[in-house]
Every structure is written in structure tokens, then in C-alpha cells.
Image 1: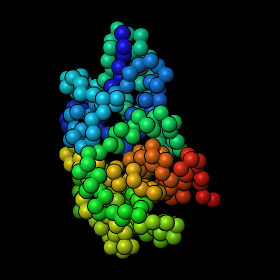
Image 2 (image 1 turned 120 degrees about the vertical axis):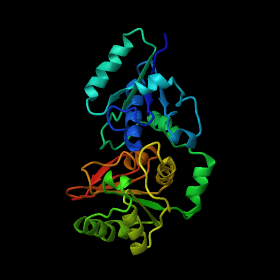
Image 3 (image 1 turned 30 degrees about the horizontal axis):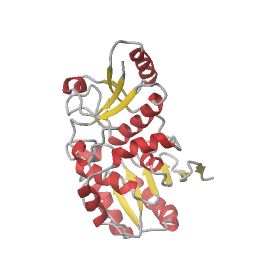
Image 4 (image 1 turned 180 degrees about the vertical axis):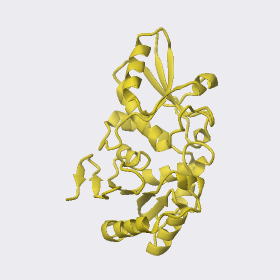
Length: 285
């Protein structure tokens, strides 16, 4: 009997925990693929209950449209990844043919992925022609770099919020001392704080896509798809995390999937941590 593991994104209000951001979902998908690659089991992704599903070209080698009831009941593993490991082993030895789960499995500071994983998850980034056109229309054809500034989940629910003055000062300093002096191409700004995004574009002459930010795979999935499309075509991705001490699944994982240099600054120290296109971590001294 062929067994299949399905990484799912549920419909709204079906989650036991909060729904993952798409960066978390991508990270979990990458590491599930690696875990299952040598197991003999099939692996698929099911985001059919989301708006995001309609923005990607459907490829049956990664996507499936499964049973809605099974998707709603999918087991969630967002903290206890050891439990997930044991669950997969139990599934292998069971008479069940399918296991529906959702996880953010994997290290946030992973510097590289193997080629097979990258080729699999790149299919998640095959946006439809309209997404590619809308994204490219606002950007220079000669190339660009992206700066993502992460301020916190609360900014998605209140797009008029502003960051505190002391945090703004850190952001301004990193841009002026680290990012702009080394950028080889025009910089495009994106942020979960819309007011900050507009302010940085005005203050430093950065480019930006005009939409307000969104989070996750439904509710307003178009901006999320456009930001991912923006990142996958970038020459270098810079990421400032003022909110938490991790690199972004959204920005950093997109970078290592497409072998794009990724430069991260994270609270509280904001030390420069660069992962080059070859997957080598270089930490500033």
C-alpha cells in the first residue's frame, strides 16, 4: 500500500493553534520533504482551502486537493517536533494510507537546503502570470535587492500602527550604515508595518509595491503572494527583525530555496549575519 503524508493549510477557524504564516508553512514543508524523501512515502501539499491556492500554478507533483473533513482535522505540530517524528513512524507501521498534518518543522537558522528540496518547494512559488506581471511592473528590469523589516504580528491587524522611536532609530542606523552602502542594485522595501514601509521609501528613495501587508494564506492573500514573488526574483535579500530573535521563514527560506544571498539583522544585538549563495554563514565581528 502506497502511503502519503499531506502538509495542509486549513480553512479559517479550523485551527487548534493559530494558523502559521506562509514562511512557517514553507519551512515546515521543506523539512517534511527532507524527512520523507528516503522513506518510500509520497509527500504532497494541500492548500486548497485557502485563497493562496488560486494564485499558484497547480502541479500534481506537489499539490493535491484532498478531503475537506480530513484537512479540517489535520494534526498540528508547531512546537513538539519530536512528537511529529514519532507520529510519522507510527503512521508508517499503521494500516492508514494518508496522514494529514501541519507543521513548521525545521530550524530557522538553516543556511542551506539540498537541491532536491529546493526543486520541490520552488513549485510553491510558481505564481500565475498576473502575479508575475503585477510584481514586475513596479520594479526595475535591471535587478533589485529587497529589504524586509519585521515589526510584529500586531501590525497586520492594525496597519496604521507605528513602531517606537527607539526601534525606528535602530532601523535607520542599519539602513544608513549597513544596507545602503553595500547595495549593488536599487532597494525595494517591504514591511509588516505599512506606515514604516512608506516612510522608508520616502526617506531613502526606496522602491515599494503599493499594497498594505498581509499575513497567511487567506483573508488577503494577494499581497503575500506578491511579496514572495518579489523576494524570489531579488539579487540580495536583507531582513531586519526588530520583534524576535530569528531569521524569517518568509524572507530567509525564500533566499536559500533560490540560492539568493540573505543578510539578517535580528533583535536584540542586530549583528550582521550573512548567508551567501553557496550556503555559507558569515557573521560580522
